[in-house]
Length: 220
Image 1: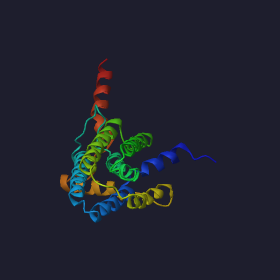
Image 2: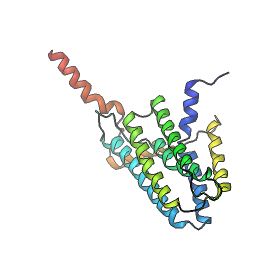
Image 3: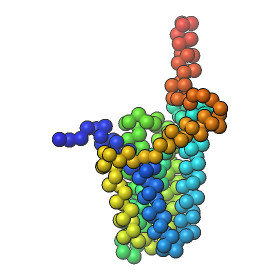
């Protein structure tokens, strides 16, 4: 019996879940540390931290204060898309590297394609808008290219990279949620900082446009 389209999209979207991507990142980071590539690891970590801060700030700004774009339907950068696009290309680039090869460009490209697929899954599941997904993919691209630039002259350790891939099997486990309660944390932080009792939601972003359209309709 074939799985439903929704089930397929859920599997794909779990590839960007923090509960799967962050352990994958930690295993690769351990590989870099043990291989003596501490400066490369630091550069990647700084890029990841900056990307995470941008995602968090964009979401808190909307949840707490309603700062977004109604015309772009933008309420915050897609974290799933950003994580998948910033980690999977690095992992696959090292995993698919030939013996003696430092990095596989085809592996990096495949990781970017999978990151885009995660973004499409967020659209299919109506979790994000196209502008939010595109922002997440471009941010992840910048992070993964930063990692590629600093790591491309280093050797890869395929055994560790293959071990890291074991975490991806969790996306097929229906009992594994594959995520941390990041949205709950974001809402809590936003409300604490803004002092508001209720979070802003996407409907609030479009309410002024709907009210303006209704007013124009009444005038006509």
